[in-house]
Amino acid sequence: MTGQRAQEVPASAAPASDALRGLRVLDLTRVRSGPTCVRQFADWGADVIKVEAPVDTAQFGGPRSGPDFQNLHRNKRSLTLNLKSEAGMAAFRKLADTADIIVENFRPGVKNRLGIDYDTLSKTNPGLIYASISGFGQDGPLADRPGFDQIAQGMGGLMSITGQPGQGPMRVGIPIADLCAGLFAAQGILIALFERQSSGKGQWIQTSLLQAQVFMLDFQAARYLMNGEVPGQAGNNHPTSIPTGVFRTVDGHMNIAVTGNVIWSKFAAAMGREDWLEDDRFATAEARSEHRDALGEEIEAITLTKPTDDWIEIFNDAGVPAGEINDIGQVFANPQVQHLGLAQPVTSQERGDTHLVGQPIQMSRTPSHIAAPPPTAGQHSAEILAEIGLSDQEIADMKASGAT
Image (cartoon, rainbow, N blue to C red; front, side, top):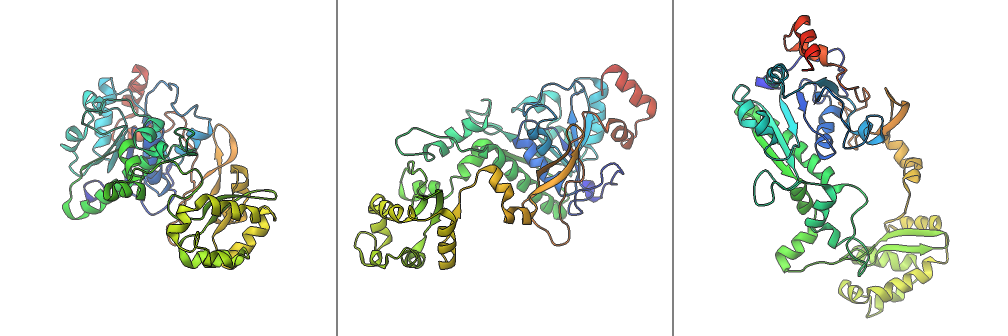
């Protein structure tokens, strides 16, 4: 809360949750990483104001009516401001003085040229928490490169360990660098909010697609840093837990995950192959790694004798992790996904009744829901400008001049 005081919640911004009620967030973001960060605050009840240009230029994530924009920008209000105009900049600085959090993902240097950087805005709002997401960092030899998810996947090593061996680098099927950078920025903001309770001061939070991607290498990065191993592609096989991977059945494919000797024993029994436990090629984890391909062939010769559903039941009854491999339609038809309520209803202003992806976190007292569809551009401009003290005439003058 700005200056340790809660904001009034406007009538048009019924919060999506009570968890972050009273926080005000100014959203200067675009594309995906920044909106992913801000969505966490919108979905948990903050008053998020999307600040955008008066002329609705083409959205990087597609049109406002598109699934991408709709899913990223729900639960927000929209204010249009021309930050290159004197009146627009004056209004923004007034609004920034009321903000708890500002999030931007311009290329480094843009915010300084506009005069909306952390050092400038924190002079009059010392409690401000300011988050910047970039492609490669705010400074350093590659800071000025334009950032894009797939570029970060490649530079951050992910594409070198994804895909089948010998078939060249492969991107993963989601913009994982964008998404993780946004989530890490949101985590940094929450850490800063907690620290501000004792210090009374805000701070500047920085992360990037490259940092997020390298961090997400996790145990693969640790294998290199600690053992000097440079892991390669393993396709659908897990690089260290064997046998874990995709296996064919009579009617398709399934995943099986056999980790550790206890589950290995259960797996061998479920397959009717207790002899594997005494086979020198498979008796230990090290041996199974050395003879991975031979073991895989023996397993698949058996899994090809039954349908996927039969095997999943057999393995799960035996305590061996196994599961179907769904397409996206099958995911949302899955009864467990439906039970968890991940597809949430919303009435879009552009599309009518539809569904969006809800938060994957359940809270016992302060749950999140989709309280409002994405706003139209400038839908709440007049009320937000009035909240910071502008008169009806001043607002009309700004509109007439193109400042809002």
